[in-house]
Image (cartoon, rainbow, N blue to C red; front, side, top):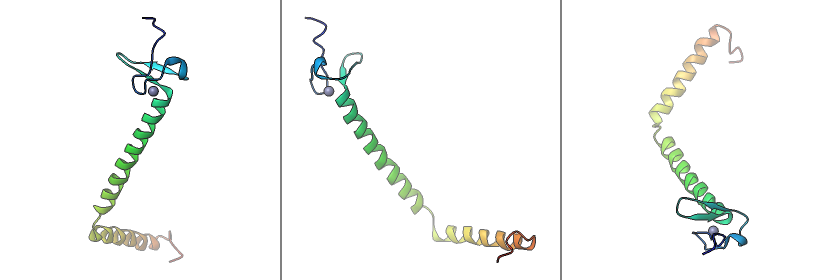
Length: 88
Ligand SMILES: [Zn+2]
């Protein structure tokens, strides 16, 4: 019943076998399990970002892209008169 018999609630390692044992309300987690959990969180967020990025790109319709390029072209033409893009 000694309080020093703490162990990781995730992998069951004794406190003495870990570099760090963090106490929660009703559980403990060791440094190795934190590293593993952190890796999972990073992997999960990577997946979320990549799907979000892909769907964002896919939302752009060709007409929208053309309209944007037309606007850029028009802008560059009108600014040419005021000698901003003299190279064109
Ligand atoms: Zn652990």
